[in-house]
Structure formats: structure tokens, C-alpha cells
Amino acid sequence: MTLTASYEFCRRLNARHGRSYYLATLLLPAWKRPHVHALYGFARYADEIVDSFTMTGDRERALDGLSARLATTLAGGTTEDPVLPAFAQTVRSFGVDHGDIGAFLRSMRADLTVTRYATYDDLLAYMEGSAAVIGTMMLPVLEPLPGMEGKAREPARQLGLAFQLTNFLRDVAEDLERGRVYLPLEDLERFGVTVADLGRGGCTPALRELLAFQARRARDHYARAVEGIGMLTPSSRPCIRAAFQLYGGILDRIEAARYDVLGMRVAVPRRRRAAIFARHLLAASAADRAERRLTVEIP
Image 1 (tube, rainbow, N blue to C red):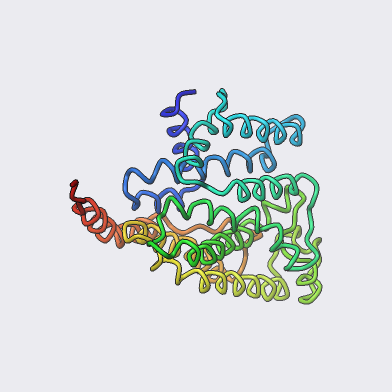
Image 2 (cartoon, one colour):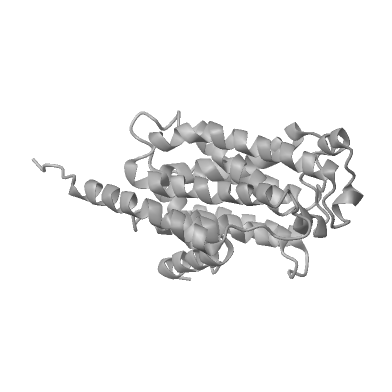
């Protein structure tokens, strides 16, 4: 697997499985996109091992194999894995924190055995690895402004959590098919909802109240993430603003559907996604041109 082919494989993974996310990445300068695709591709690749409906065989062994190949690749070894050459190159190029990678793999491993979370704090501990670290791994590629590297980390975490909670709300029925419930059990009890209720396909008033409560939590994470946009280099801001609106749009659609996520898979209409992209395209092009005009005098 050549490096070029590996980056292209990751791009295709992103385009196929993360339509909203992929659309937002098109607003980045061309040189940043392959690195974002590589990070997404690795996350998707690992997620597919633990989540796929079609994969057969020992998922734990497959995840062990991925971890072993990753360690070899990061140490400078070669691999035939289609994702890892690009991922390892991006990790080395941007100094991506290996601790974040480890936290992500631990959360993927938890999905092999953990199917319920008693409290929201328990769920947050899982999401630290499954979502928050995705935000912090992306951060060096998105380029915080000088002096903002440390301050930008928390908003990046919060954005990862917001995206993950949005997906959990949209995918309640799909996750239940896999035997998993990402709604904290203490919240189900608080609103008088049982796990059995989630499998009945109808949205009761109690379930609507529960999902509205979770949606407010997601919006709180979005609110905590907003300040991070201004901490990024201007050419990265249109991408993140678009991502905010695309994923926030999923929450809007869930609310418009009166939280009926069991009977349908909520999505932002294609026309709406295109309008969001077009709205930020001019700003993205202008910021990219401005950065290209900057020159450094060579003594």
C-alpha cells in the first residue's frame, strides 16, 4: 500500500460513511484535507471492526491485530494495511498525541463488552476516548493560532462530545440492534423509560422528554465548543462553522420530528447541506488566498 493510495483510501472512507463531515472538509485548504481524511479513516476503520453488522470472526482479535499493526507502523515499519500508512504519516507530521490514540482504542475495545452506561459520567468516560480525543487529534491539522494551542484543546474536546451525542440521538434504534444503549440508565429511570420501550418502535411522551433532555446536553457541548473556532487559523474556520451547522442541523431535524428517532433515521436534506456548504465557500476561498499571499523574506 503506497502512501498516496492509503490517503485516497481514507478519503473514500470519509466520503462514503461521513457525508456531512466530508462536505465540511472540502472547505479546508487542499493540503489539509488528506490529513483530516487519514484521521477520520483510522477512526472509521476501527469503529467498523466493533460495529459492523456484516463482519464475521473474532472482533477482539481483529482489534488486537489493528493495534499491533499500528504500533509497528508508528515505529517506522511497513504494513499492507490500507489505512495505517496515511494515519501514521499524519500522526508523525503533526505530532498527534499517542495518548489520544490509546484512549480511542480503549473505547473501541469497551464496545466489545460494554452495552450499557449507568450514569452520564460513565458515558462521558467512554466518550472521552470515542469522541473527545477525535477533536484533539484533529486540532494540530486545523492549526490553532500561535499561543492558542493549549486553550483550543478544551473546545475541540467539547465539539467531539457534541458530535457524538448527536449521533447517539439519531442512532438509538440502530445501536439497539447491536445490543447497545448509549442513553444513561439513570436518565431512562428518571423519565420512566425502559430499554424494552426503545425496541417497540413508537415514541411515547416519556421517551420524547428523555430525548429532549439529551438534546439539550448536546447543545450545551456545542455552546462550550464555539469559542474554539476563533482560536483556529482563518482557513480552518469555515470548515468548523459548517460542521457545527451540519451536525446541529441533525438536532434540528430530530426536534422537528418530535424526537421520533425509532421510526426513521433523521438526516439533513441534501439541499440544506448544499446551502450550508455554499454559505461558507466564499469565506473559505478568501481565507485560503490570503494565507497563500503571505510571504517570508529570505535573508
